[in-house]
Length: 583
Image 1 (tube, helix red, strand yellow):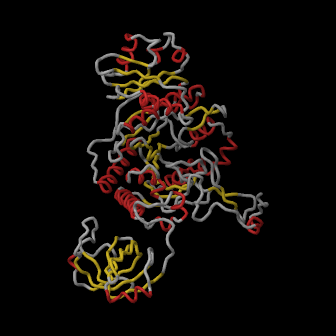
Image 2 (tube, rainbow, N blue to C red; image 1 turned 135 degrees about the vertical axis):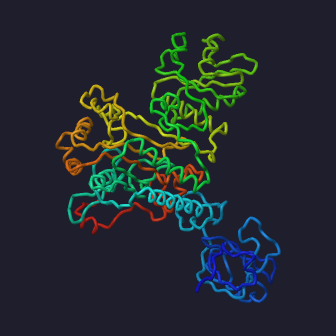
């Protein structure tokens, strides 16, 4: 037996008991020639070991080092100098004998919470980084969220059903990862971007409540909350309307927060239309932890001789409460911030509503105090507030102001990671027009149903832009954590959707003939939702990066620097696959 106890479970009640522990050496401290203290670590915690005078010779012959794997036997004793910050801080093990199970090289970074290793170095040696307590806590949280979700769905009658990873490529949306087939030369599988069509087929099959915690794959540009392979909580239900989906999965989120964070949401999550979100927050995933809504000033400020405003498609403002004392340096910094390429604005205009009631702007030359007062009234500004204004092309300006609002919220301390404000965003457009391709594309995916009262508009191409989708997103603190829709379940309507997206009948049958055929054999009304599991875990853990909650993540270039993947493969493999040499 390698151990009788773990390094995290012994307490003062076990004093006097002989035990055996095994684990990794975190630190070695020699106080003088006859006493050595070692912190021994495993997955469950840390226990202090005391090597006394009887082991001096053995320690000289077998010196211990950081990350050595050792086994010790000894007696649980009360510590003279207790550590209240450790669960095992009241005791130590007086070692009677030990053995080195495996020596270790000096690690390339310190394996502790305040490590000296950078991101790339720690990802290269991820198996060492996973020993750190902070990373371990993240993976423990991920496991607890997973278990909480599964337990909830089980109580609601959902069945966990696996779907294939090797499927047909149907390029629509993000790029597929493709896999060559040796047995079918010059033909390829694709890795699933989601199990969408399979879960709809399961509804046709009568499995009316399905779920999976499932890997998905998208070959797209990466960022902090995006990986080429990621995990979804994928769910589908039959004989439901939108209200049924929202109620069920709102309950699931409440259940997870109660179990994981001890937070109870007593009220129903607020609901906001897509149009409202875009108008007042500038994006479809609003952070409602703070107000500072966008205010359209276009009609208020145009045709008054200021060319920047007069030539703009949109003039939009936010009111930062209590910020009228911002210095010139702070305002210049904000101006530089909106000029960054990521934001893309040419400048920032400000209006200070001073505490004495006077108004001072960066465009006083063009607007007198009476007109500036109109700005303040439109923005509901009070003495002591600061109004920030952007102007330009509508789409870019609204997006830029949305980003500026979030930046101001961050600077003013309104985006507390320990405060959680979920909401549903509903009534999305069904289509959006792709200018480059000169065609309509699905805003969610081509299996999303129009709102029931707008199905007739599918016969009027000139009105595609008016159609609202029977779709919904759940947003938490400015991040979309899940999204779904009520699906199309009739062949005729699905064919109309494919036609609206520019697919010929032949192309639709080639790509989705299996689904269209299934709809002719009694498909029930159905709908579902998929949650970004990695993203949900990162928000619950107070991190902006999902990589912190994935055991073996990729870097920002989509590479696994530990395995050095992707990589070349042998020519013999390429020959078997009937693929020529890739230069």
